[in-house]
Image (cartoon, rainbow, N blue to C red; front, side, top):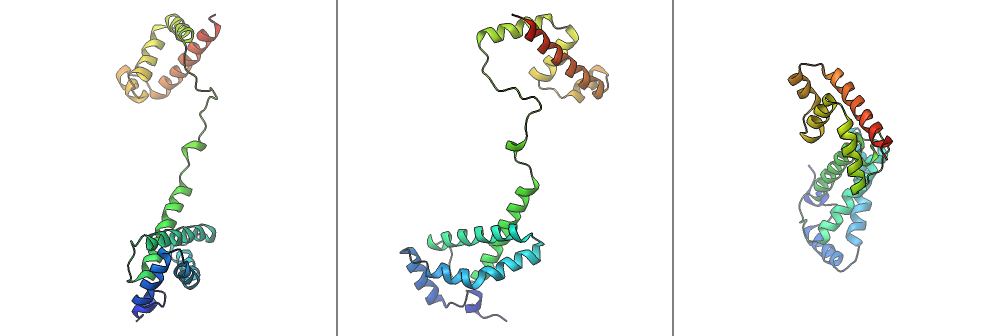
Length: 186
C-alpha cells in the first residue's frame, strides 16, 4: 500500500503547505518538484490506459500540469491524494483533446458556393424582387416554404406527395433559375 507522502509526490502535509506558500510568492519550487517527480509516470499512464497517441497524451498531460499549478497557486487544491488528482486531470484533458480531434471545426467547413456575405442595398433588394416576380409559381412556393417558413424538404415532400430527391433537385433548379434572373436584370 502506498503511504500518504507517496500519494503527494513524497511531500508531507507541512512540506506541501510550505512550498504552496512559496508558490503564492512566485517561487516555483513546488511545481518543479511535482513536474520532475510525476510528469513521465503520468504521461506513460495516459498513453497506456487510454491508448493515447504519445503526442496528444503529452499535450494533455502538460495542460493538466499547468492547470494543476494554477489551482494550487490559487489555493483551490489541498493536500490529499495529489498524485491521483493530477493523473485524473491529465486523463480528462486527454479526453477533451481526443474529442476535439474527432470533430471538425466549423471554421474548416467551407460553404459550397464561394459567395462572400454582403449586405444587400436597396438596388440589390429591388433586383431580387424583380427576379422573384419572374419566377414560376411552383418555384416561388417551394423556395418560400423552404427559406421563409424554414420547412425541411422531406416535410414539403410529404405535404406535396413527392419524393424528397425529386424535390431537392427541383429546389436546386429553382435557385439556379432565380440566380439567372437576378444576374440578367440591370
